[in-house]
Image (cartoon, rainbow, N blue to C red; front, top):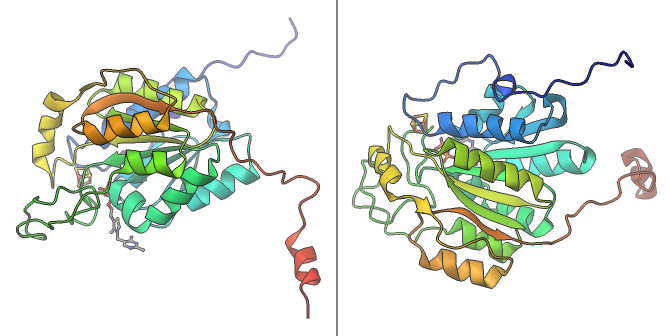
Length: 278
Ligand SMILES: Cc1ncc(C[n+]2csc(CCOP(=O)(O)OP(=O)(O)O)c2C)c(N)n1
Ligand code: SF4
């Protein structure tokens, strides 16, 4: 006996905080929270080595409900904060949680460049095709003919296609999951975390309050009929031609993550200031 107790693996429950979620009853985000904590437990992570970063929205409440380091940031800026954190503390597992409004409207530009940079982050977007927190405005993934008080007759606008855009911009891992399958979603999140580089997981997560018809998603989703490919063009073609309900890992690449050396060679801000002093 060495006298050093072996670390007891953490369970999914250990990763849940004591803060009670205030989502509407039936919201898909409850299951996504369970999937995240299950994935952490599956990977035998420890909460002191994990950070969950978000922006603003119902979905972005996730960090408060997990027992890890957390940052509930500014609307649309979760990826900027997470990128800085991961570069400064590469030993941390960094999971970024967002919604379709947060991630694709105000945060759309950060999404493109996060894919391009390929920093080792896992980015999950709880997509409910609506702004839930601010009471039902259409988002970039809202169907053009979705009729609502705030969009009478529908917006008529073409929808944003996040998975294909992620592929084109350089994401190294692309998957789709459904909140109604918490175990399947947990496995996908775990694989996303395990895969080096920028991993993007679109999670169909119904907003039962503003899009009650999304309860029907459970009858529409199915496992993707083919295995993940490492050919981005093939993956893009498949995703462009499916109906948005094929679930699973769709693309897995082998791009080297971006991790600059921020060790000894890095200048301190004060030294840089001196160099540029007039
Ligand atoms: C800079 C800024 N602009 C707008 C808002 C208002 N706002 C808060 S959440 C939100 C949209 C949330 O929608 P989504 O990201 O889809 O998340 P959901 O609530 O559906 O999970 C908006 C527009 C804000 N908080 N900050
Ligand atoms: S408004 Fe929609 S997304 Fe927000 S908690 Fe309620 S059901 Fe969930």
